Each structure stands twice: as C-alpha cells, then as structure tokens.
Length: 486
Ligand SMILES: [Zn+2]
Image: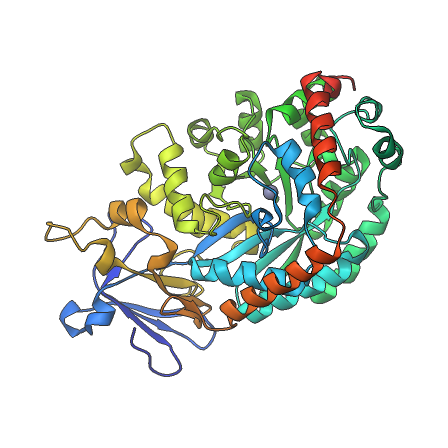
C-alpha cells in the first residue's frame, strides 16, 4: 500500500467490482478530504510495488446482525446448544466493562474487513442501559467503524414463550419461589424516555435503532408504539424473528391469523425494518415481507451452532427480498470471521455457487450496509462513494493458480479468511493496516477484558446447579408443548 497526502491514495493490483463481469485489474483510488472517493483510475500493474501488486481492493463488509460480544459465551461455559437452553447459560456471564467488551468486538470485526455493524445490545445490567449505550458509542468512535445501536425493548415472556406456571411447576422449590416473580422489565414508556436521552450519544459513526428483541419478547402495545415512532422519525427497526421452531410453534398458537400478518396490521413491516434469522418463515410470509420492503439478515454460523435450522435462502432470493448477513456473535470458529460467513452463506443457497459470488458480496457491501447506515452511496468503488474499503492478500489466495488471469470472485469466496485482510479504511481513515487494528490496541484490550472477566467471575456466585435445573425445566416445558397453551 502506497500512501501520499495523509493516506489519500490507495493502490492495489486488483479490484473486486460490484458486477461479476466488471474490471478486476490494477487500480489507484484517490480519497478526498470529505472521506469520499475522488477518483478511480485503472493503472499499469507494472508501476506497482510488489507489496501493492498482491493486494485486492474491495468495498468493506457489513455485519448486519451482531451483539458486541467481546467476551465469548464459551469463555464462561455457555457451550453451543439449542437456543432456548443457551440463553439460560448466558446468565453465567460476569459483569465486564461495557466499553471494553464492545471495543474488543468492534476491533475484531474491523480486522475481519467489517466497516459497519448492527449491534443488538444485550444489557449486562438492565438498570444501566443508558450508561452501557454511552460506552458502546465511545467504543464505536474509538475503533472507528459504523455502529447502529439497536436499543432493546424486552417486556414479555422473560423465561419461556407462553404461560409461566407450567415452568414453575417443573422447578425445585427454592427456584420456584424465586422465579415466580419474574425480574422487573422496563416498560415501553420508560424505555422510550431512555431512548430519547441516548440520542445525545449519537455521532458520525453511531446511531440508534429501535430493537424489539423479538415478538415473543415484546408486548404488542410496545411493538405498536415502535412502529409509530419509526414512521414518525424514520429510524430503522431491527428484530429477531422465527429463529427457532419453538418460536414458530408459539406464534402459530398465539396468532391464529398469523404473526407476520399481525405485525403488518400494526404497521411494523416497512423498508425500515430488518428481521434477523427468519428461519421458520412460510412462503406467504416471505411474499408479504418482500412486498413491504423488509430486509432479512441471516446468520448461518449462529444457526448451525444453536441448532436453529437453516435460513430458507433460496426461497428468500426467489422472492427478491433484501438479504444480508450477520455473525450474531457466533461465528463458526468463534472468531468473528465475516469472510467465512459469506462463504457459508453462499454455500447454503441451493443453487450453483458461481451464480452467487457477486450477489453475496453485494449483499454485504450494499444491502447489509443500508440496514446500518441508511442509503449513503456506500458499498461501491466509484467516485462520490464513501471510502469504506479494504484489501486482502490476493497473492496468497492465488499462489497456486495456473491461469494467466486468476478468477477473482471464486478464489475470494472459496478461500478468503480474516487472516488475509491487510488494510481497512472507513471514510478514508486507516482503521486496519497490515492486518492489525491501528486505532486501538486490540491485544491489550483483549488481555484486560479477560483479566477483568476472570476477577468478576471468581467474585460472583455462579449457580451451575440452578442453571442446570432451569435448563431441564425449560426443555421439559417445550417438549410437553406448554408453549401451545396461550
Ligand atoms: Zn441475535
């Protein structure tokens, strides 16, 4: 990478274009003072340094659904398992500094070529949501990537989807009494008031979205209030929907006329809405969502690890609905590798992967980006587009090619991993160089996060027996079909 005039020139031996048949040769990109691309020139590859010639330049990726888990659930014993018991295991998470937790998560994403992430916030301390949002806002600024903070609205079914009493009957006595009064949840009015205050934390790289966590976890009146608020202020809404079969079963009993139809009736379905997972959608629901301009963020790695099923990618693509991809804090190798997630997504479509190379990349570059920052012309290497770009070491990816002109798309989609990321720019600012995040000291932040988490974990009483008992009771609750009794 050759830099002049405060890193405003980016030169690379190859370019990955938005179209599969676009120009893939050597390129020189000039970035203006406004952080947008001022010029894109095809150049003679012979003029490049060897270190530039091996680079492939492309728009930076988006991670359209995540949770900012700097500390992995595996660290505190929440092993991969079906979602309904996994969420119980998450209660063993020790309190950590929300700034540090988000900083580590965002810096790892940056090193994976991600310039924009949808951060669905899970509170560590429900009474400290405002302070946690401020901390995440600071982490976004310090790392330097775009973050949409999805503000959680969670005021329904805290333990199981359905009536509580059958669960209590399945718990041993000391726990029965404890869980008979579920923990206090924020009311919609209180949450909206906090949301209004949190707008003060917004900056160039950080914006708020409404996040009804999922219909089974959000009161109908709250969903309606969010739909109205979004229609008024134009803010995006992000929700989980139909992640597991049990959620589907609950919804079919709670909404005999259809949950998706209900969400449409209250005005929630619009181009401002993104739904995560969407595994258990029916065809008529996909058609309605597509008609309303809703976007789907799929999470294949997470779905495999939590045994949720596979997203209906081929049916989604046939409906022309907007599709994008997210890591959900649950990458296949627990390493926040967005490039591998794209590979998995591409292979999950039941059709010739060659037809999907450009589609999958554009879904990350443009569709996912749009759900995070809105339509800003990004996700393209063109004059006027934001200079949110990254390079990978294509020389290594193509080291065994026999072709005079290597096939760029297939090699990237089949082989690229986070280890191949060389540089990443957000609005022309260098966030990653030579594979390392330069804006913050990630290794030091990781060490401190783990050190603090260990101390907090030792100090807190982790009731493993209680977690086990609750997981057994919940499993029995759903096996017996208690969630049908609504
Ligand atoms: Zn999620």
